[in-house]
Length: 246
Picture: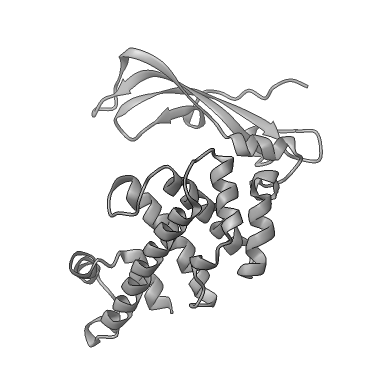
């Protein structure tokens, strides 16, 4: 029936901020609906984007003008797991085969509602792969991304049951993920990294609770309070807000 085509406007233009390299992009979608498509991707979310190609032709300057790049290129990205999900006739990547062992082994271990389960599956699986690539938790760069992933998992797990621990993660699940991404890493090393970060986060949470129990922090918190808690005690704003909700 043909390929839906839309005008190259904001939805078909890629940039990495207000200044810098940019250009038009061509997006490839697959239809996930049960009926023949009757609209275009920006008007029906049953179109799922699986690939895009950015024609990196321009540089946007501070005044908003565009100048040609001296060296043009094509930046392309394929959502491989999203494509696998659609080819397998699934409505979500969490239902396709790449998540099958996680779907099977995690719910009996940690009963969670569906949104929480998806956060845990996605972030924890990603954490295993990132550790397998040699990244370690830190406060900067790739290490900070890993730290945020692990701590988000723990925040979700501890919301209902504070005694939950990543030490309960089955060895077979870690090994399966490392093998899937062809990472020659000892699963015990991955578990050690995750547990070390869990211990740090648990100690940080406990320190945060003691600090927030002080009279100074009993009322509404202002920007100065958040800066003090972060700069002096290493408590990020999102962690402080989570602790205030307990």
